[in-house]
Amino acid sequence: MIKADVLVVGSGISGLSYAIKISEKMPDAKIIIVTKADEDESNTKYAQGGLAVVTNFDSDNFQKHIDDTMRAGDGENRRDVVEMVIKEGPARFQELVDWGTQFDKESDGDFKLGREGGHTENRIVHHKDITGFEIERALLETVRKSPMIEMMDHHYVIDLITQHHVPGKELDTNDIQCYGAYILDEKNKKIKKITAKITLVATGGAGHVYKNTTNPKIATGDGIAFVHRARGKVSNMQYYQFHPTALYSKMDGMLFLISEAVRGDGAKLRLKNGEKFMHKYDEREELASRDIVARAIDNEMKISGDEFVGLDCRDMDHGKFKEHFPNIYQKCLDEGIDPFKQLIPVVPACHYLMGGIDVDMDGQSSIKNLFAVGECTNSGLHGANRLASNSLLEGLVFGHNAAMKTVELLTKNDFNFDDLKAVPEWNEEGMKMMDEMVMISYLRKQLQELMSDLVGIVRSNRRLELAQKKQREIYEAVTELYNYSIMSPQLSELRNLVNVSYLIIKHSLQMKENKGSFYNKDLAKKPLTIK
Image (tube, rainbow, N blue to C red; front, side, top):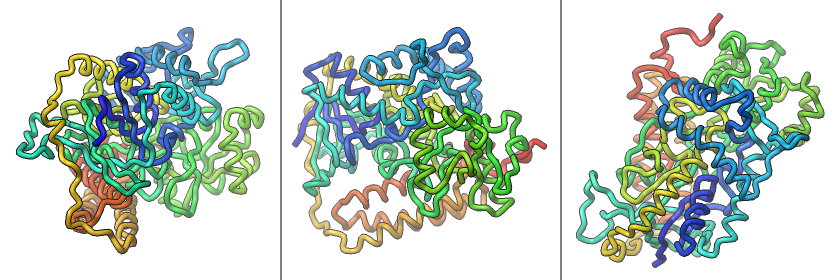
């Protein structure tokens, strides 16, 4: 048995900043961070564009950023949350700088500020086009300096431990308590019990519920799924943002992201034949919010039958492009595309989930002593559609708030120690090793196909009803596998993806009107085009 004061699930900006904050306030607190891949593998690592924060108060202000966020979220955001995150942003950003994160600066020492779709001012701080990678580097270096923070990579959370695991206890859905998690040590093929006074879920998104996504392969909705199974509250799963411009590939899986900042710097979207089309959908054209741009591209592809559209960078300043987007430029060259001579082939891809685990302003979930931060949550910041580059800011602000509340709870030390001691080990009696992994890969592909074809950018009642029926068949097959098989990461991920798909379909069917990233053509009151 392993005991900790705090168990952190996930090693992105949310989990790492949270752990650092607690360690700074309570240097004797034992903190364990578990991550299912390498310690630096997270959605944070792949964030290209940057972090949205008001730093230039001469031209920008909090109100402008608040208004932009509310507009992008189609008014479904919680205004008190939006105001809190944006007003706390500069202080949290400064902490990131203090921890050693290098952001690009002008010759006079001011931060270079980019602009992305939905923003009315330049306010995106960045490190070239690998901002997330640089943030991850600085946070991991800071974590390593704390002797009381232990990183456990290649450890996969199977399920949360709640009082229903304790012998003789029944689950009271109005008073669920978390005592840690059962975790699979992938290297030693053993399921460990880690008990903790406080548990934080910072597992990121669920992009691999679809065929094509910009998310890394770890993004399988694990945190949302195991909180849902523990009877925690989850909402707004119908709101899934598709990034308009992922680099087209004939292969399914993770697609390379062409940052929105490229359009912010002047790139134009064109059909294969060179025609522009964004003017037909929004007066802001390429700088419209992601949901509008993604639907426009999806619609044009359906009209033309083409597999992609083009991003035109040929008239942009070549020197500035190479300086600001060196990795995007190199990736294009590696794929045989010269962005200064050819259109970059792009398609919309599943990118960011606005819904998730319900949390309050301190990141507390509906389960006692369980916190959640970042993309796995429905914090109220993003509403029906996330404004570009607000996600890293959310991770920092909510990571801070959750850490401060955790410190308060640890100081009180009012925990159910009898239950913590009584938690049993994981029981695999009667289970057997799966002899045909093809069953898992087949079911996973089936699930991704149905989600992409029936629950994609544009939905309909008939598609959703068919998706619900097909999803149920896959759920029953996966449940049968789970009931007799020794746990593996592959089976657990599939189980989680099935849970996430159920929630997306269920919440989509409950919608009565189109909002933000959610679009059902049967609910549409006006055509997609404006002209």
